[in-house]
Image (cartoon, rainbow, N blue to C red; front, side, top):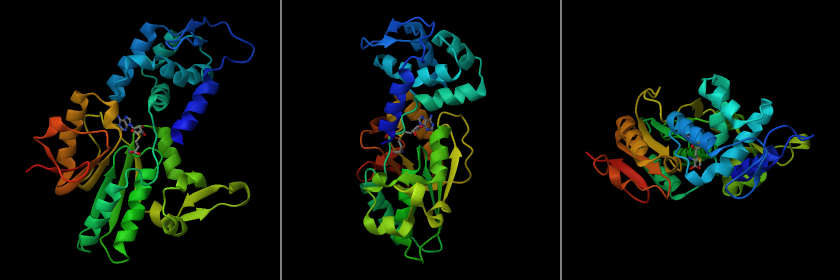
Length: 302
Ligand SMILES: C[S@@+](CC[C@H](N)C(=O)[O-])C[C@H]1O[C@@H](n2cnc3c(N)ncnc32)[C@H](O)[C@@H]1O
């Protein structure tokens, strides 16, 4: 759904402003005309900046995607060319750097995505002594579906007398974090949430909120949302985690960046903790740090 929304926004942003405009039109790599002046050199600057600041390694074929995602920033700032726009970003303008990064992240997610991880988590929490609180980090939490799925799993496993569970949910993208903090979702996005959990943990809106559902306070209390860039040298974290969900984010990084991040993750994972990664992310090159321990779940190698 997130991907669809971003694509729809992309399309409308890519449309030229009403009344035409003076910007030169070029042709994109799929043959579509560019309204704003956007050259291969501009694209190279975008790739270099997003790589340096977010670790995202954009493939050479993504010129059209970059154009459509950033065109709305040019329109918002009433700028005619990418060259001018990139000068602002490269000057370090905080607000624009944030908007630039937000525009270039891909935030596709859903409730209970890759459900086998939630089954492992439930089993582990059910076995855990009640006096051993559990800490969980969802390190690319997007709009909140992942951390709230973790919270539901924990509440179910706790059955009122299990260990206390706290969840830190972080992402680089401030737009998705704001959405996650609101905890309001279209009901058609709750399809993968089992009905008994939907009834227990969501409030259905009515009147002008018809078609929306809000996560109940009971779950929201368990999750703390913060901005954190995985590329930052220092992560502002306190203590270690029993479980880390690092899913479907490493695919945007190259091997060198992945390795550096996983080295730091190993430092913040409890010795008996588990790291969950996305189905397409296998880290054969990190065998000295982690060993596979179930389907895309990793444990520290001692
Ligand atoms: C495809 S979503 C995955 C969401 C969720 N983990 C899942 O599996 O459904 C990838 C998320 O990674 C975030 N991201 C990208 N680069 C990041 C970085 N350098 N630091 C932290 N988050 C980042 C994006 O903003 C996006 O929300």
